[in-house]
Length: 377
View 1 (tube, helix red, strand yellow):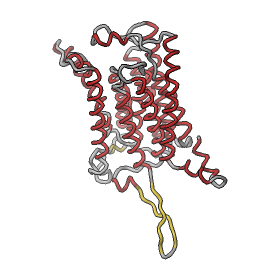
View 2 (spheres, rainbow, N blue to C red; view 1 turned 90 degrees about the vertical axis):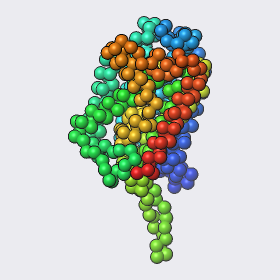
View 3 (cartoon, rainbow, N blue to C red; view 1 turned 90 degrees about the horizontal axis):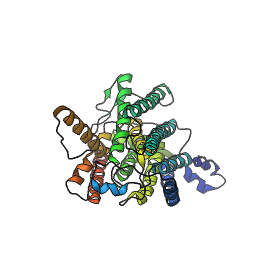
View 4 (cartoon, one colour; view 1 turned 30 degrees about the vertical axis):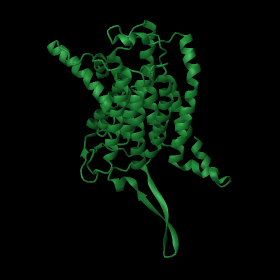
């Protein structure tokens, strides 16, 4: 929205800065971060309405003291993310609206889940099968939009990490790719949801992953222009970052950097109040929407497979749950003391802050490996 102020640059030259993605990313971060100043009053309202966290009795005993801590703090994360993106992104860009739609709809599913948990004063919430049905329905609409919108020219090509895009890629049938992309988005959303079990455990890796996608979206969609002198005349030369790094160029995808910046800003703001000991939890509203946002970024930027590394911590948490459930059903034995795996380390005697910080370190290392793939091709 504010991007269009650059059209007034002839009247006020500094307005020209609004055309640059880099400037608007920073402003989106700042806007989302400033909106987090609303948390003290927001937490107070949640306490007044007794919107408190429901804690399972069969989990670590140290978690029982968290019972009643305000939840659904993800509603303010989602609000700041959407407002910041709408303010600073190019609203004529279709990728931006797809990103916002998935994030918002997944947040709505999370809201229903949180509301039922609070209303029933239990940890069941929305049945898992209905949650998945709604998520896959939303992503199915996304796939239809992607492949029917001629302005996007979206392909079903699959690119591999550490392999040059111009050397090898896999062309999938549209239906097969659509199913794969849907699983990527829904899987990432639920993996983030499973990770959100300790104070600040999920939000910091989400911000790290969003920062990584920010870089990936920028290099995939940016063509730099700079003046050069030829025979005494000054002309503008172009430099395609994607071609140089041998990754697919996606026209317009750099506008998603604004959404990535908004996630980072809102995430940092939320972490101030969610760090140990947490004053507020994000709830499923926050974790499902943020996970859906990360999955959507992976699909739209053609980093579906690279997201396995970027979101590796979330994948580890999800795999630990699947492994535990499968093992217990088949053999009656548990692989871990408790799943997701962060609870396993708690029950082994690790202090909660130690589990949190070590998992943060893992997420940072994985993102660095993902960024290294840009040059190792």
